[in-house]
Picture 1 (cartoon, rainbow, N blue to C red):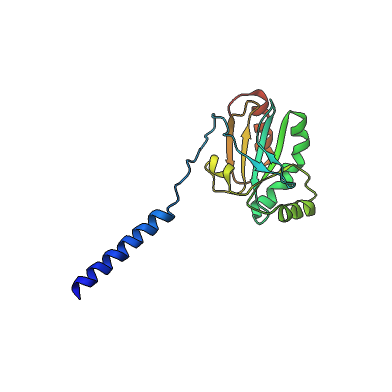
Picture 2 (tube, rainbow, N blue to C red):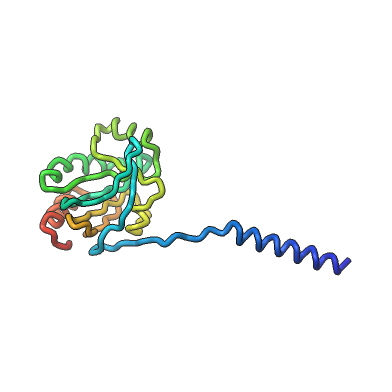
Length: 174
């Protein structure tokens, strides 16, 4: 009897190890970018399902990570939207990068707030991972060459936006 117990234990152990090996997920490498380094190649979708990438084409970009369920995001978006037209005249594109929501949920909130900025959908949080941020909102300031100049965690103020706009259009580091 004692002999059978050992064989059963061994079988259970081998089955358990086999299950661990068979279901093991190999982590994909995570690219983390710090200010002063280029933003990695990332892909997002639009509400219509088109694929977009944050390429600068010589224009600076302000990428705001947000979600409609996030109270600080809800407070920040009208501030960003109000300054977006003046930023556009300075050569800076403002894009809202939604974190994990459906286009219907995000667009419903934006329509209620009368916000018409471009929205990219980042279902897996690739941008948040790339800039090592778990905070919402997070704003990523990228210059015209595609280099990240600042990762700002928390709601941005009009002063931060205008200061960074000057920095981005001058091509200087903050």
